[in-house]
Length: 485
Image (tube, rainbow, N blue to C red; front, side):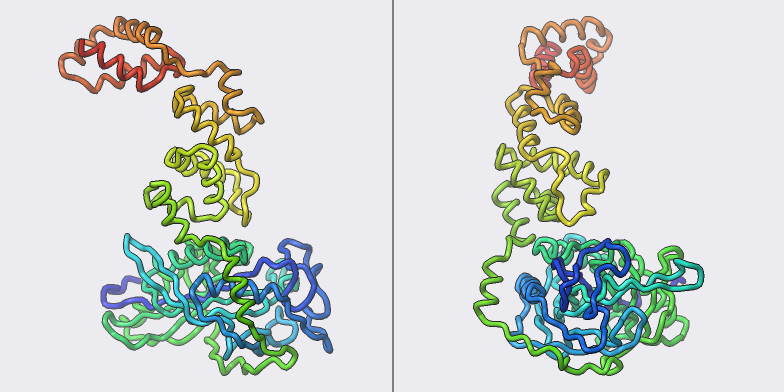
């Protein structure tokens, strides 16, 4: 495929399903936890047995309102449940309890940042629904199995307007949304486990046109990278089809990660195909102003506000603030380090470097909340304090840091035990400098002849001779004076 993509523009809308972090399912008391043996977390209600009645989990409504308030949605004081009728092996009842005409949240927006520009993506709605079971194909030869543990787990479906135009914008929107639901504590955002899933509605139209093209829904994407790749492929496929004089059809396609292409799955259903009607077993939900305001007052500081505060209060660069606020637990860890020792920029450097490296290596970020940090915040603050007070150099600090990963000792105790205290005695350093210069008279002559880059060589030799303990600024100062003499 090699279409003229300059002639076309993409039109992309995303439907995100976020599994809520409730202890029990939406309409029964079964555990909503991930990872139990197949079909262990089930009961007659979530298995759709005849004669059972659903009982709404109040926590689900609280989480939905929390999300709506954070995204600046209109919260419907009266909303109701609907039955979405379709047949699939993982849907026991033959219908899914969802919301249709009267969702709990409408409107709202997210501001995303792509290529140093900000774009506002509006939302259509947020509604509550129950999750379905999970089909497991090819596990035993030609047979397929169904695990109903997920059936009845509460979902938020978050639907955007078709206002994104590129894979990069879609990726930025998804990352922003996942960070938000994690901050709110309503979803762990784990795409590999399916607790944060995305379907993309993709179409193309001639650049400058206002009428929407034929919409194709793309499913089966379990990472941000997969979403971006699938959208890029689909935009090119659709443009190529139109360039060849072909016609696009409204359909659902699956992303094949191995071949990196989309494949047709079925014709796309419309709302009337589901035969929605109000659920007769569940009354409408009536929300009081007190209920909504209580949730509003309990909202945490949200990512955008925290990022702006990190820039204004701590003087951090915008990039640092963006990285540090990408997870709520990471932002709280940073603030704990700064509270213990106020060098915010040094704390940011250590966290964005060594701490995040270890988080990735140990896969700690797979969990919704990091509790077992590689180094406690108080110890990292104490290490930075040792550098700032001149007890150790930055180079020695790296050695101490590695020791801290396997030791319960404080940084100061490690420094004292290993004899790593920085050499700051001028006369002692001067003696080492004299030895280094005496050993390299030819390089001293070159330096004084104009080859000033050799100063780095001399600094390195002094640090080597002192086992890295010499105070680097003092070494530079004394060395410069000696060489210029």
